[in-house]
Image (spheres, helix red, strand yellow):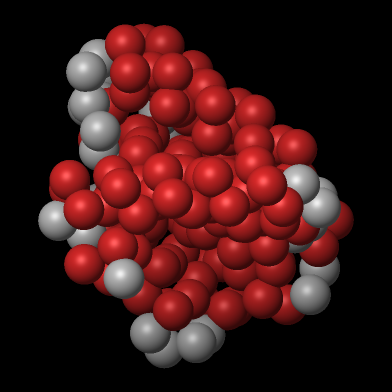
Length: 168
């Protein structure tokens, strides 16, 4: 049921554009269905609340919830209860949120951490998306040459993964 409220929160946030209802559902998951303080769904719900506040223009609140999501997900990753693929998917959303908030250094730190984990596990899952996000952060910081190189990396890995959206 907690997972339902988490999913419902994202439906309300992105499909129905009902931010209040989204926050309500995320809070239900956090307050009524989260038995362990380091669950994947707690991280996902915190991210959802952060994204809702970002949509409302309350950037300090957004950043606070996104930070919480990142910290919780780090614990979840260490516990090894979820696949790296699920964890990477959530990290990609966290990184993109940080980039949108202009927190490029935080985004870059997470990108390097996740790419290191993927490399250790011989995975290229979303390495192209992470390289593209890294490129955007580097461009935003004025590091044009490095950013361009990361774009080439992203396109190359996208070709390997069959990611037609990114490779073109």
